[in-house]
Length: 127
View: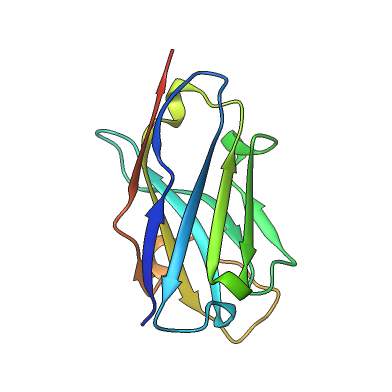
């Protein structure tokens, strides 16, 4: 399995920006479709954004469309989540997840699809 480590979380004011990174090791990242999930206090883990193996396809949950951008650099074995116009309701622990996939253009967004998870990084947005 691939090992994942998130970074880039922190405390930011509403309207601000953060960029999360997910560094992979142990396997070649280009074999994996990648996604970001988050879990707010007292809530279930929810899907945020997904990207296919080579980055040709992306998908977002409605609440972050137009504000968040998922991208990847397979040469650096890293996936990113650029978060702009942050809102207090974006406060959560953010997790990256990997699914080994045969299909180049496919993304995944169900919790049960994923083989590997990172430990999470806290994002706190103050009002």
